[in-house]
Image (cartoon, rainbow, N blue to C red; front, side, top):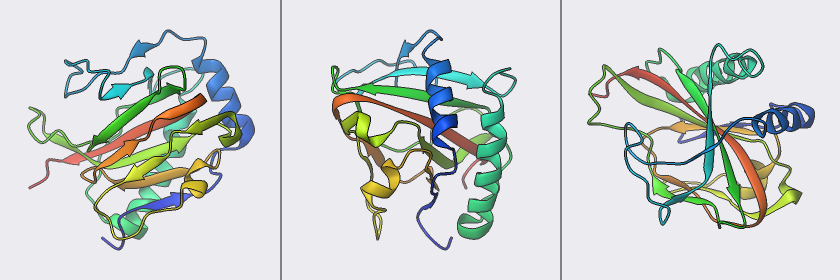
Amino acid sequence: MKGEWCYFSNRFTDSQCKSIISEIKTRPAQDATLGVDGERSDNSYRRSKIRFVQRNDLILGWIFDEIWKMAIQANDEWFGFHLLKMDYIQIAEYTGTDKGEYKTHHDVFYMNKTDYHRKLSAIIQLSDPTEYEGGDFQMYEIEQQPTAAALKTQGTAIFFPSFIRHAALPVTNGTRYSIAAWIDGPRWR
């Protein structure tokens, strides 16, 4: 591993981001949950609405190819993990009205009962940063933080090992949309 994170600036165009947001708003949302199978709800820990997108989605399926290309490049240049698949993506909506946030967590479910673990996590910023306040993405226990301004740039994607603790800080005004994706590989040993 050469670094703890890497990002691709403006990888999605402003037009693509707006189109994704527009499409996702037409789909039913659910309250975000916690745990391997989403078995727990705790709005003191995670407050957002989410929508899942599957690879075969006729309108948004193209996002998988874009994230996969970036993941392979990030992995080749920075992480060197054994990656095999990406099952779905999640689009989150954090609102200032709800003080939307996701407190400190990591993305690996070490005790899951599958043959796979999340190895690489990705967050893609969909919202124009002038349309909301707060909502910064933060990583913990790392040597150097990426700048908040860089990560708030619309269309920017950050990749990091799924075991790194991170958070979405509360949105205080407006609405922030982001994509989360997880690239799996064989179980960590």
